[in-house]
Image (cartoon, rainbow, N blue to C red; front, top):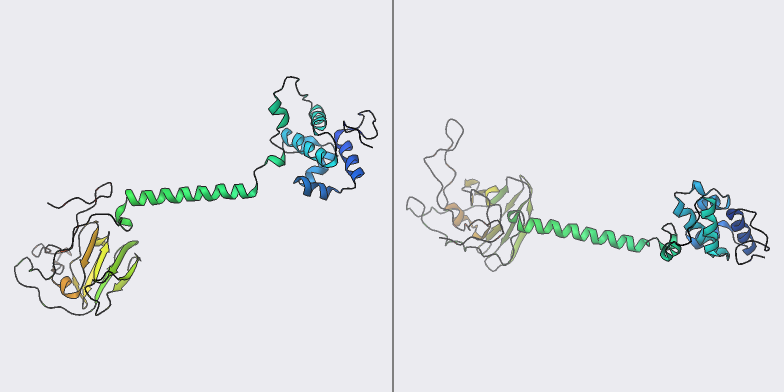
Length: 297
């Protein structure tokens, strides 16, 4: 028989807390494994408690909290067991300790956050980090990702305009090929009806050929300076010489061939200054620091 204070048979408290808990467990017919499953306390810790080796537990709060949960599982008074554990540890509870401290022990496994709550917290943290990355890329590096759909861009100028010398552009034909000169060059190609042909980030050296016969093919990108262009195997001038948002740029063979090809290479290896690039149709003003598009002059 176990009395209300946790002493079997009403005997005086001559035995330790661990021995009283062990006898109470045996009286209920439960094994250590069953107590461990019921209290969620590791079985090795329950063994230490029954042996009275409270100093071998991770901390004093664990010793008190685990012993209290063990006492509840075997029908003993949790408060009395907790007090006796404190006494065995050499630190008696003061009479005027706050009630909340008497009722809460950080080591009590019943008050440890559940696994589901921990996973939910990690998921929320991951979403917060992802949102921060998207905010940075959208507002501080707009050329690296697709510009917002509400961004005001300057429409491309009509194709077929005369070159700088005033002569009409020569007829051109052949495959139109764009090759990325840097990693992570975002592009979107689409036809005159707005049907998307491709949208992706090109890796350095990766090429895309505009499908022959596409009706009024156009381009949207934030990295025009990183795209090398050939028409029928012959290089033509880049869309721009610096990073900026360009949209609705015609990329059919005739429009691109209207540009001047890169100037001849001089003996020193640098392009000749005698053939400057003609104005580039379809160029939009560069985005400002907050991602907006500056108006044209």
